[in-house]
Image 1: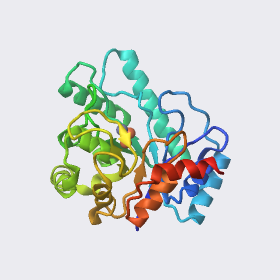
Image 2: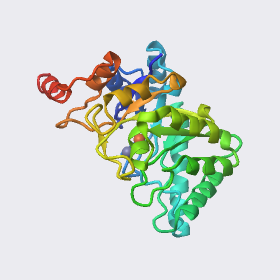
Image 3: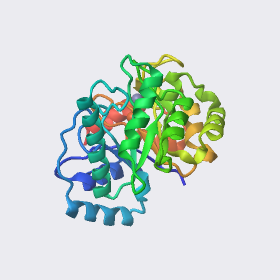
Image 4: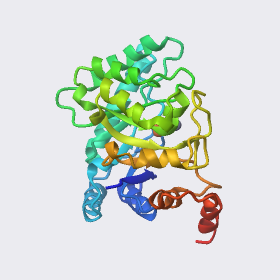
Length: 297
Ligand code: FE
Ligand code: FE
Ligand code: ZN
């Protein structure tokens, strides 16, 4: 079954119920949330009552809890061991985020592996591994999905070999999974038009069963640009056909596909992009259609 959705908001007042309702309005059957603003660490308390109601609603909608993904804030950087204090902060914040996932009954947390900020890739990777070894224990319930990155700035995790290194060196690595991002793969240098060869490499080095989520984005950049700027589906350098081939690839059939494409004039594109993906036919007027639809409701 095709599992397609987008990232949706999670607010203090409506929490998971609000996220579900937003995702339904796009005709999604999976979705991703940040449990607070992605760029800061202000977090409100998780309501038990709303969470229980949300679980009932998900059941009614036949949405699997594994298809509700959480994304950790970008500012958690496990690679840059500048000083004890900043590292302790990153580790304790990620622990809290894992705790919030548990309170929400969700078990897949996407994490950017970090930026080494001048320390070098090797040191950055080792720092991330060390931090994950502090965070994860035998009893950890939440999976950490390491995302494939574009390689902008001093990001690590832009090569499959980086992900392999992390998995090979984390003690409780049954909890480490991976999240692909189509824009990031392209920007970091992987040829999306030959997606099966990327999957082959992942399968031989890591195991394809480690893939638990895929971010579906077109890209504003050329292959290997190391830039990370998302584009609406079919309007970037990846192109509609390549994206359809990723989404409908038989080897990834049951994996949730999450759109993180940009808003169009302040309006969410997801309802329209999802419809276009289900139709498997590119609509060159998509962006105008989005604006017209939301202007009139
Ligand atoms: Fe991400
Ligand atoms: Fe992403
Ligand atoms: Zn990105």
